[in-house]
Length: 466
Ligand code: SAH
Ligand code: SF4
Ligand code: F3S
Image (tube, rainbow, N blue to C red; front, side, top):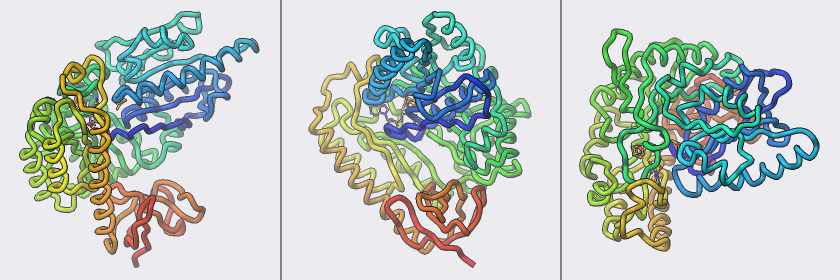
Protein backbone atom coordinates (compact mmCIF):
# COMPACT_ATOMS: atom_id res chain seq x y z
CA UNK A 1 0.00 0.00 0.00
CA UNK A 2 -0.17 2.22 -0.50
CA UNK A 3 -0.63 5.78 -0.02
CA UNK A 4 -2.73 5.54 3.07
CA UNK A 5 -5.47 7.86 2.13
CA UNK A 6 -6.06 8.71 5.73
CA UNK A 7 -9.69 8.17 6.48
CA UNK A 8 -10.48 8.21 2.83
CA UNK A 9 -13.73 6.84 1.64
CA UNK A 10 -14.65 5.96 -1.87
CA UNK A 11 -18.28 5.29 -2.60
CA UNK A 12 -19.89 3.58 -5.55
CA UNK A 13 -20.54 3.80 -8.41
CA UNK A 14 -17.92 1.26 -9.35
CA UNK A 15 -18.76 1.71 -13.00
CA UNK A 16 -20.53 -1.57 -13.48
CA UNK A 17 -22.68 -2.41 -16.45
CA UNK A 18 -26.40 -2.24 -15.94
CA UNK A 19 -28.27 -5.43 -15.05
CA UNK A 20 -31.81 -5.92 -13.79
CA UNK A 21 -33.10 -6.45 -10.24
CA UNK A 22 -30.43 -6.83 -7.51
CA UNK A 23 -28.70 -3.65 -6.44
CA UNK A 24 -25.43 -3.23 -4.58
CA UNK A 25 -23.92 -0.28 -2.77
CA UNK A 26 -20.17 -0.54 -2.24
CA UNK A 27 -18.38 1.56 0.35
CA UNK A 28 -14.61 1.52 0.39
CA UNK A 29 -12.27 2.59 3.18
CA UNK A 30 -8.50 2.46 3.37
CA UNK A 31 -5.80 2.24 0.75
CA UNK A 32 -5.78 2.06 -3.04
CA UNK A 33 -5.63 -1.71 -2.90
CA UNK A 34 -9.07 -1.68 -1.33
CA UNK A 35 -10.28 0.57 -4.14
CA UNK A 36 -8.93 -1.93 -6.66
CA UNK A 37 -10.41 -4.90 -4.76
CA UNK A 38 -13.81 -3.19 -4.59
CA UNK A 39 -13.70 -2.79 -8.35
CA UNK A 40 -12.89 -6.47 -8.83
CA UNK A 41 -15.65 -7.56 -6.42
CA UNK A 42 -17.97 -5.17 -8.23
CA UNK A 43 -17.11 -6.93 -11.50
CA UNK A 44 -17.93 -10.31 -9.92
CA UNK A 45 -21.25 -9.00 -8.65
CA UNK A 46 -22.11 -7.53 -12.06
CA UNK A 47 -21.59 -10.96 -13.56
CA UNK A 48 -24.05 -12.18 -10.92
CA UNK A 49 -26.70 -9.71 -12.05
CA UNK A 50 -26.11 -6.90 -9.56
CA UNK A 51 -26.39 -3.28 -10.56
CA UNK A 52 -24.39 -0.62 -8.66
CA UNK A 53 -26.29 2.12 -6.85
CA UNK A 54 -24.95 5.13 -5.01
CA UNK A 55 -26.93 5.01 -1.79
CA UNK A 56 -27.58 2.51 0.96
CA UNK A 57 -31.32 3.23 0.69
CA UNK A 58 -31.45 2.04 -2.92
CA UNK A 59 -29.49 -1.18 -2.25
CA UNK A 60 -30.43 -4.81 -1.56
CA UNK A 61 -26.81 -5.55 -0.69
CA UNK A 62 -24.35 -3.28 1.10
CA UNK A 63 -20.70 -4.28 0.76
CA UNK A 64 -18.28 -2.48 3.10
CA UNK A 65 -14.61 -2.86 2.25
CA UNK A 66 -12.79 -2.04 5.45
CA UNK A 67 -9.39 -0.90 6.75
CA UNK A 68 -7.73 -1.99 9.99
CA UNK A 69 -4.57 0.10 9.86
CA UNK A 70 -5.43 2.38 12.79
CA UNK A 71 -8.01 2.09 15.52
CA UNK A 72 -10.15 4.90 14.13
CA UNK A 73 -10.33 3.27 10.70
CA UNK A 74 -11.55 0.01 12.22
CA UNK A 75 -14.09 1.61 14.55
CA UNK A 76 -15.79 3.50 11.72
CA UNK A 77 -17.09 0.18 10.46
CA UNK A 78 -19.05 -0.55 13.61
CA UNK A 79 -20.80 2.82 13.66
CA UNK A 80 -21.83 2.22 10.07
CA UNK A 81 -23.06 -1.30 10.89
CA UNK A 82 -25.20 0.17 13.67
CA UNK A 83 -26.98 2.36 11.12
CA UNK A 84 -27.42 -0.58 8.76
CA UNK A 85 -28.98 -2.70 11.53
CA UNK A 86 -31.70 -0.10 11.90
CA UNK A 87 -32.35 -0.03 8.17
CA UNK A 88 -32.49 -3.83 8.02
CA UNK A 89 -35.09 -3.93 10.80
CA UNK A 90 -37.18 -1.37 8.91
CA UNK A 91 -36.92 -3.40 5.71
CA UNK A 92 -37.87 -6.61 7.44
CA UNK A 93 -40.88 -4.92 9.03
CA UNK A 94 -41.92 -3.97 5.48
CA UNK A 95 -41.46 -7.54 4.26
CA UNK A 96 -38.25 -6.98 2.29
CA UNK A 97 -34.61 -7.39 3.36
CA UNK A 98 -31.11 -5.94 3.24
CA UNK A 99 -27.95 -8.03 3.01
CA UNK A 100 -24.72 -6.78 4.53
CA UNK A 101 -21.24 -8.03 3.66
CA UNK A 102 -18.02 -6.88 5.33
CA UNK A 103 -14.81 -7.32 3.34
CA UNK A 104 -11.25 -6.06 3.76
CA UNK A 105 -8.75 -5.96 6.56
CA UNK A 106 -11.21 -5.64 9.48
CA UNK A 107 -12.98 -8.72 8.11
CA UNK A 108 -9.71 -10.61 8.10
CA UNK A 109 -8.57 -9.39 11.51
CA UNK A 110 -11.84 -9.84 13.38
CA UNK A 111 -13.71 -12.57 11.47
CA UNK A 112 -16.52 -14.09 13.52
CA UNK A 113 -16.20 -11.32 16.12
CA UNK A 114 -17.82 -8.92 13.64
CA UNK A 115 -20.99 -11.00 13.55
CA UNK A 116 -20.96 -11.28 17.34
CA UNK A 117 -20.76 -7.51 17.71
CA UNK A 118 -22.98 -6.73 14.71
CA UNK A 119 -25.42 -9.56 13.91
CA UNK A 120 -26.73 -7.46 11.01
CA UNK A 121 -23.76 -8.79 9.02
CA UNK A 122 -24.51 -11.73 6.72
CA UNK A 123 -21.06 -12.26 5.19
CA UNK A 124 -17.55 -11.57 6.47
CA UNK A 125 -14.97 -12.05 3.76
CA UNK A 126 -11.20 -11.54 3.99
CA UNK A 127 -9.04 -10.09 1.20
CA UNK A 128 -7.71 -13.41 -0.09
CA UNK A 129 -11.14 -15.00 -0.60
CA UNK A 130 -12.95 -12.46 -2.77
CA UNK A 131 -13.36 -14.98 -5.58
CA UNK A 132 -15.72 -16.82 -3.21
CA UNK A 133 -17.97 -13.79 -2.65
CA UNK A 134 -20.83 -14.82 -4.99
CA UNK A 135 -20.98 -18.26 -3.40
CA UNK A 136 -20.81 -16.79 0.12
CA UNK A 137 -23.74 -14.49 -0.69
CA UNK A 138 -25.73 -17.43 -2.03
CA UNK A 139 -25.17 -19.34 1.21
CA UNK A 140 -26.12 -16.29 3.25
CA UNK A 141 -29.34 -15.96 1.28
CA UNK A 142 -30.15 -19.42 2.59
CA UNK A 143 -30.01 -17.97 6.10
CA UNK A 144 -26.43 -18.72 7.18
CA UNK A 145 -23.91 -16.25 8.59
CA UNK A 146 -20.84 -16.83 6.43
CA UNK A 147 -17.25 -16.14 7.50
CA UNK A 148 -14.51 -16.61 4.87
CA UNK A 149 -11.13 -15.64 6.27
CA UNK A 150 -8.73 -18.36 5.17
CA UNK A 151 -5.64 -17.84 3.10
CA UNK A 152 -6.55 -20.33 0.37
CA UNK A 153 -4.01 -21.83 -2.03
CA UNK A 154 -5.90 -20.80 -5.16
CA UNK A 155 -5.27 -17.32 -6.57
CA UNK A 156 -8.24 -15.04 -6.03
CA UNK A 157 -7.36 -13.03 -9.13
CA UNK A 158 -7.78 -16.11 -11.31
CA UNK A 159 -11.23 -16.62 -9.81
CA UNK A 160 -12.42 -13.05 -10.36
CA UNK A 161 -13.75 -11.95 -13.74
CA UNK A 162 -11.86 -9.44 -15.87
CA UNK A 163 -13.42 -5.99 -15.81
CA UNK A 164 -15.88 -5.42 -18.66
CA UNK A 165 -14.85 -2.64 -21.04
CA UNK A 166 -17.80 -0.46 -20.03
CA UNK A 167 -16.68 -0.67 -16.38
CA UNK A 168 -13.10 0.27 -17.24
CA UNK A 169 -14.30 3.25 -19.26
CA UNK A 170 -16.60 4.40 -16.47
CA UNK A 171 -13.70 4.32 -13.98
CA UNK A 172 -11.57 6.75 -15.95
CA UNK A 173 -8.29 7.11 -17.78
CA UNK A 174 -6.05 6.38 -14.80
CA UNK A 175 -6.39 2.88 -13.34
CA UNK A 176 -5.00 0.76 -10.53
CA UNK A 177 -3.55 -2.68 -11.15
CA UNK A 178 -2.54 -4.89 -8.23
CA UNK A 179 0.68 -6.77 -8.98
CA UNK A 180 1.71 -7.79 -5.48
CA UNK A 181 -0.12 -8.38 -2.27
CA UNK A 182 0.74 -9.18 1.31
CA UNK A 183 3.84 -8.41 3.31
CA UNK A 184 6.68 -10.35 4.92
CA UNK A 185 8.31 -7.34 6.57
CA UNK A 186 6.51 -7.38 9.93
CA UNK A 187 7.11 -3.80 11.00
CA UNK A 188 6.21 -3.96 14.68
CA UNK A 189 3.41 -1.36 14.45
CA UNK A 190 1.61 -2.82 11.45
CA UNK A 191 -1.36 -5.17 10.94
CA UNK A 192 -0.89 -5.68 7.21
CA UNK A 193 1.16 -8.92 7.37
CA UNK A 194 -1.69 -10.40 9.41
CA UNK A 195 -4.59 -9.04 7.39
CA UNK A 196 -3.21 -9.48 3.88
CA UNK A 197 -1.02 -12.50 4.53
CA UNK A 198 2.35 -13.44 3.07
CA UNK A 199 3.83 -11.69 0.06
CA UNK A 200 2.49 -12.95 -3.26
CA UNK A 201 3.50 -11.63 -6.70
CA UNK A 202 1.26 -12.05 -9.74
CA UNK A 203 2.96 -13.47 -12.83
CA UNK A 204 3.94 -11.23 -15.74
CA UNK A 205 1.50 -12.68 -18.28
CA UNK A 206 -1.51 -11.96 -16.04
CA UNK A 207 -0.33 -8.41 -15.38
CA UNK A 208 0.34 -7.74 -19.08
CA UNK A 209 -3.03 -9.18 -20.04
CA UNK A 210 -4.79 -6.89 -17.60
CA UNK A 211 -2.73 -3.84 -18.62
CA UNK A 212 -3.50 -4.48 -22.29
CA UNK A 213 -7.23 -4.71 -21.55
CA UNK A 214 -7.03 -1.44 -19.66
CA UNK A 215 -5.14 0.24 -22.51
CA UNK A 216 -7.61 -0.95 -25.13
CA UNK A 217 -10.45 0.50 -23.05
CA UNK A 218 -8.83 3.94 -23.04
CA UNK A 219 -6.70 3.88 -19.88
CA UNK A 220 -3.52 5.93 -20.32
CA UNK A 221 -2.01 5.75 -16.85
CA UNK A 222 -1.64 2.70 -14.63
CA UNK A 223 -0.57 2.62 -11.02
CA UNK A 224 0.86 -0.73 -10.02
CA UNK A 225 -0.21 -1.60 -6.51
CA UNK A 226 1.35 -3.69 -3.79
CA UNK A 227 1.76 -3.46 -0.04
CA UNK A 228 5.42 -3.83 -0.92
CA UNK A 229 5.21 -3.20 -4.61
CA UNK A 230 8.94 -2.97 -5.20
CA UNK A 231 9.40 -6.42 -3.65
CA UNK A 232 7.38 -7.76 -6.59
CA UNK A 233 9.19 -10.63 -8.28
CA UNK A 234 7.08 -12.50 -10.78
CA UNK A 235 7.49 -15.25 -13.28
CA UNK A 236 8.49 -13.61 -16.56
CA UNK A 237 7.51 -14.61 -20.09
CA UNK A 238 10.98 -16.12 -20.55
CA UNK A 239 10.60 -18.44 -17.55
CA UNK A 240 12.95 -16.28 -15.45
CA UNK A 241 11.95 -14.36 -12.40
CA UNK A 242 11.61 -10.65 -13.12
CA UNK A 243 11.88 -7.67 -10.78
CA UNK A 244 9.73 -4.54 -10.83
CA UNK A 245 12.23 -2.58 -12.97
CA UNK A 246 11.95 -5.20 -15.70
CA UNK A 247 8.15 -5.32 -15.41
CA UNK A 248 7.89 -1.56 -15.78
CA UNK A 249 10.11 -1.67 -18.91
CA UNK A 250 7.82 -4.26 -20.46
CA UNK A 251 4.63 -2.37 -19.52
CA UNK A 252 6.06 0.82 -21.05
CA UNK A 253 5.99 -0.94 -24.45
CA UNK A 254 2.20 -1.36 -24.38
CA UNK A 255 0.56 0.90 -26.91
CA UNK A 256 -1.59 3.49 -25.15
CA UNK A 257 0.01 3.20 -21.71
CA UNK A 258 1.76 6.55 -21.50
CA UNK A 259 2.22 6.80 -17.78
CA UNK A 260 3.24 4.29 -15.15
CA UNK A 261 3.36 4.71 -11.38
CA UNK A 262 3.73 2.25 -8.54
CA UNK A 263 3.04 2.32 -4.84
CA UNK A 264 4.05 1.60 -2.08
CA UNK A 265 7.75 0.92 -1.90
CA UNK A 266 9.92 -0.21 0.96
CA UNK A 267 13.40 1.35 1.10
CA UNK A 268 15.01 -2.09 1.42
CA UNK A 269 13.57 -3.24 -1.91
CA UNK A 270 14.55 -0.24 -4.04
CA UNK A 271 17.00 -2.03 -6.34
CA UNK A 272 19.29 -0.67 -9.08
CA UNK A 273 17.14 -2.03 -11.92
CA UNK A 274 14.18 0.00 -10.68
CA UNK A 275 16.28 3.13 -10.17
CA UNK A 276 17.64 2.71 -13.72
CA UNK A 277 14.07 2.42 -15.01
CA UNK A 278 13.45 5.87 -13.51
CA UNK A 279 16.54 7.12 -15.34
CA UNK A 280 15.60 5.60 -18.70
CA UNK A 281 11.83 5.49 -19.10
CA UNK A 282 9.85 8.63 -19.88
CA UNK A 283 6.66 6.64 -19.14
CA UNK A 284 7.71 6.03 -15.54
CA UNK A 285 6.47 9.12 -13.71
CA UNK A 286 8.96 11.00 -11.52
CA UNK A 287 7.13 10.40 -8.26
CA UNK A 288 8.04 7.93 -5.56
CA UNK A 289 6.20 7.12 -2.35
CA UNK A 290 8.97 5.83 -0.12
CA UNK A 291 7.88 5.68 3.54
CA UNK A 292 10.60 5.97 6.17
CA UNK A 293 8.34 6.24 9.29
CA UNK A 294 11.00 7.79 11.54
CA UNK A 295 14.37 9.54 11.37
CA UNK A 296 15.70 7.92 14.55
CA UNK A 297 17.79 4.78 14.22
CA UNK A 298 16.72 3.63 17.65
CA UNK A 299 13.06 3.86 16.69
CA UNK A 300 13.64 2.41 13.21
CA UNK A 301 15.21 -0.59 14.92
CA UNK A 302 12.30 -0.97 17.34
CA UNK A 303 9.95 -0.71 14.37
CA UNK A 304 11.88 -3.50 12.61
CA UNK A 305 12.30 -1.33 9.53
CA UNK A 306 15.69 -2.91 8.75
CA UNK A 307 17.41 0.27 7.59
CA UNK A 308 18.95 3.32 9.22
CA UNK A 309 18.13 6.97 8.61
CA UNK A 310 21.48 7.48 6.87
CA UNK A 311 20.85 4.51 4.56
CA UNK A 312 17.51 6.03 3.62
CA UNK A 313 19.05 9.42 2.89
CA UNK A 314 21.79 7.80 0.77
CA UNK A 315 19.12 5.88 -1.15
CA UNK A 316 17.24 9.11 -1.82
CA UNK A 317 20.47 10.69 -3.13
CA UNK A 318 21.03 7.76 -5.45
CA UNK A 319 17.48 7.95 -6.81
CA UNK A 320 17.80 11.70 -7.33
CA UNK A 321 21.11 11.21 -9.15
CA UNK A 322 19.27 8.92 -11.59
CA UNK A 323 16.15 11.10 -11.91
CA UNK A 324 16.87 14.61 -10.62
CA UNK A 325 13.29 15.91 -10.86
CA UNK A 326 11.74 13.04 -8.91
CA UNK A 327 9.19 14.05 -6.27
CA UNK A 328 9.32 12.10 -3.05
CA UNK A 329 6.55 11.38 -0.62
CA UNK A 330 6.56 9.41 2.58
CA UNK A 331 4.72 8.11 5.61
CA UNK A 332 5.61 9.03 9.19
CA UNK A 333 4.48 7.72 12.53
CA UNK A 334 4.92 9.94 15.59
CA UNK A 335 4.76 8.61 19.12
CA UNK A 336 5.89 5.05 18.48
CA UNK A 337 6.55 3.41 21.89
CA UNK A 338 9.77 4.76 23.43
CA UNK A 339 10.01 7.78 21.07
CA UNK A 340 11.74 10.59 22.97
CA UNK A 341 11.92 14.28 22.10
CA UNK A 342 15.37 13.60 20.68
CA UNK A 343 14.09 10.77 18.46
CA UNK A 344 11.39 13.09 17.17
CA UNK A 345 13.98 15.83 16.45
CA UNK A 346 15.85 13.23 14.38
CA UNK A 347 12.68 12.74 12.33
CA UNK A 348 12.36 16.50 11.80
CA UNK A 349 16.01 16.62 10.70
CA UNK A 350 15.51 13.81 8.22
CA UNK A 351 12.50 15.60 6.73
CA UNK A 352 14.57 18.80 6.41
CA UNK A 353 17.28 16.85 4.64
CA UNK A 354 15.05 14.94 2.21
CA UNK A 355 12.63 17.75 1.25
CA UNK A 356 9.37 15.96 0.49
CA UNK A 357 6.79 16.96 -2.10
CA UNK A 358 4.12 15.43 0.13
CA UNK A 359 3.82 13.08 3.10
CA UNK A 360 1.26 11.32 5.24
CA UNK A 361 1.68 11.62 8.99
CA UNK A 362 0.05 9.54 11.68
CA UNK A 363 -0.05 9.25 15.44
CA UNK A 364 0.99 5.77 16.47
CA UNK A 365 -2.14 3.70 17.03
CA UNK A 366 -1.90 0.51 19.10
CA UNK A 367 -2.95 -2.49 17.01
CA UNK A 368 -3.85 -5.61 18.96
CA UNK A 369 -1.71 -8.59 18.03
CA UNK A 370 1.27 -6.58 16.79
CA UNK A 371 4.55 -6.48 18.78
CA UNK A 372 4.19 -2.70 19.23
CA UNK A 373 1.06 -3.22 21.31
CA UNK A 374 3.10 -5.10 23.92
CA UNK A 375 5.87 -2.50 24.16
CA UNK A 376 6.41 -0.43 27.26
CA UNK A 377 6.86 3.35 27.17
CA UNK A 378 3.74 4.10 25.17
CA UNK A 379 3.89 7.80 24.38
CA UNK A 380 1.17 9.96 25.86
CA UNK A 381 -1.45 11.55 23.66
CA UNK A 382 -0.40 15.15 24.34
CA UNK A 383 3.16 14.49 23.13
CA UNK A 384 1.83 12.73 20.04
CA UNK A 385 -0.46 15.66 19.27
CA UNK A 386 2.32 18.21 19.62
CA UNK A 387 4.80 16.23 17.52
CA UNK A 388 2.22 15.57 14.83
CA UNK A 389 1.42 19.28 14.56
CA UNK A 390 5.09 20.24 14.22
CA UNK A 391 5.78 17.56 11.63
CA UNK A 392 2.68 18.43 9.64
CA UNK A 393 3.64 22.07 9.66
CA UNK A 394 7.11 21.30 8.30
CA UNK A 395 5.72 19.01 5.60
CA UNK A 396 3.04 21.52 4.61
CA UNK A 397 5.79 24.12 4.11
CA UNK A 398 7.74 21.67 1.95
CA UNK A 399 4.64 20.83 -0.10
CA UNK A 400 3.97 24.53 -0.68
CA UNK A 401 7.60 25.10 -1.65
CA UNK A 402 7.40 22.19 -4.08
CA UNK A 403 4.26 23.72 -5.65
CA UNK A 404 5.78 27.21 -5.93
CA UNK A 405 8.91 25.78 -7.53
CA UNK A 406 6.68 24.39 -10.27
CA UNK A 407 5.44 27.85 -11.30
CA UNK A 408 6.78 28.66 -14.77
CA UNK A 409 7.52 25.02 -15.59
CA UNK A 410 6.14 23.45 -18.76
CA UNK A 411 4.61 20.06 -18.01
CA UNK A 412 2.46 17.39 -19.61
CA UNK A 413 -0.91 16.84 -17.95
CA UNK A 414 -3.15 13.84 -18.26
CA UNK A 415 -6.68 15.30 -18.25
CA UNK A 416 -8.66 13.12 -15.86
CA UNK A 417 -11.96 14.67 -14.85
CA UNK A 418 -14.18 17.77 -14.90
CA UNK A 419 -13.23 20.54 -12.49
CA UNK A 420 -15.43 21.91 -9.74
CA UNK A 421 -16.40 24.84 -11.95
CA UNK A 422 -17.88 24.10 -15.33
CA UNK A 423 -15.48 25.11 -18.04
CA UNK A 424 -12.56 23.58 -16.13
CA UNK A 425 -10.81 20.24 -16.29
CA UNK A 426 -8.45 18.65 -13.79
CA UNK A 427 -5.31 16.95 -14.93
CA UNK A 428 -2.38 15.35 -13.13
CA UNK A 429 1.15 16.58 -13.43
CA UNK A 430 3.94 14.01 -13.62
CA UNK A 431 4.45 14.74 -9.89
CA UNK A 432 0.87 13.74 -9.11
CA UNK A 433 -0.33 17.29 -8.43
CA UNK A 434 -3.87 18.12 -9.53
CA UNK A 435 -3.73 20.95 -12.08
CA UNK A 436 -6.77 22.99 -13.10
CA UNK A 437 -7.03 24.07 -16.72
CA UNK A 438 -9.55 25.56 -19.14
CA UNK A 439 -11.79 22.81 -20.49
CA UNK A 440 -11.20 24.07 -24.04
CA UNK A 441 -7.66 22.72 -23.77
CA UNK A 442 -8.69 19.17 -24.58
CA UNK A 443 -10.77 16.15 -23.69
CA UNK A 444 -10.57 13.78 -20.76
CA UNK A 445 -7.86 11.25 -21.64
CA UNK A 446 -5.74 13.76 -23.58
CA UNK A 447 -2.21 14.53 -22.52
CA UNK A 448 -1.68 18.26 -22.99
CA UNK A 449 1.34 20.51 -22.57
CA UNK A 450 0.82 23.46 -20.24
CA UNK A 451 2.74 26.05 -18.26
CA UNK A 452 2.08 26.16 -14.50
CA UNK A 453 1.00 29.69 -13.62
CA UNK A 454 0.16 29.71 -9.94
CA UNK A 455 -0.42 27.51 -6.92
CA UNK A 456 -4.00 27.36 -5.58
CA UNK A 457 -5.64 25.78 -2.55
CA UNK A 458 -6.88 22.64 -4.28
CA UNK A 459 -4.27 22.37 -7.01
CA UNK A 460 -2.08 24.32 -9.38
CA UNK A 461 -3.34 26.47 -12.24
CA UNK A 462 -1.90 26.30 -15.72
CA UNK A 463 -2.20 27.89 -19.15
CA UNK A 464 -1.70 26.43 -22.61
CA UNK A 465 1.69 26.74 -24.27
CA UNK A 466 2.00 27.37 -27.97
N1 SAH B 1 3.79 -1.04 3.29
C1 SAH B 1 2.65 -0.19 3.29
C2 SAH B 1 2.19 0.19 4.64
C3 SAH B 1 0.76 0.31 4.69
S1 SAH B 1 0.19 1.14 5.99
C4 SAH B 1 3.01 1.01 2.67
O1 SAH B 1 4.17 1.32 2.70
O2 SAH B 1 2.15 1.75 2.20
C5 SAH B 1 0.40 2.81 5.48
C6 SAH B 1 1.01 3.62 6.53
O3 SAH B 1 0.19 3.63 7.68
C7 SAH B 1 2.34 3.12 7.01
O4 SAH B 1 3.38 3.47 6.15
C8 SAH B 1 2.45 3.78 8.35
O5 SAH B 1 3.00 5.06 8.26
C9 SAH B 1 1.01 3.92 8.78
N2 SAH B 1 0.70 2.97 9.86
C10 SAH B 1 0.73 1.63 9.80
N3 SAH B 1 0.43 1.10 11.00
C11 SAH B 1 0.20 2.14 11.85
C12 SAH B 1 -0.13 2.26 13.23
N4 SAH B 1 -0.27 1.18 13.99
N5 SAH B 1 -0.30 3.48 13.75
C13 SAH B 1 -0.14 4.59 12.98
N6 SAH B 1 0.18 4.54 11.69
C14 SAH B 1 0.36 3.34 11.11
FE1 SF4 C 1 3.25 -2.79 7.19
FE2 SF4 C 1 5.88 -2.60 7.22
FE3 SF4 C 1 4.70 -4.34 5.60
FE4 SF4 C 1 4.47 -1.74 5.10
S1 SF4 C 1 6.38 -2.91 5.08
S2 SF4 C 1 2.84 -3.28 5.06
S3 SF4 C 1 4.43 -0.88 7.13
S4 SF4 C 1 4.69 -4.40 7.81
FE1 F3S D 1 -5.01 -1.19 3.12
FE2 F3S D 1 -6.02 -0.61 5.48
FE3 F3S D 1 -5.70 -3.09 4.78
S1 F3S D 1 -4.40 0.44 4.51
S2 F3S D 1 -3.98 -3.12 3.41
S3 F3S D 1 -7.03 -1.61 3.81
S4 F3S D 1 -5.39 -2.28 6.78
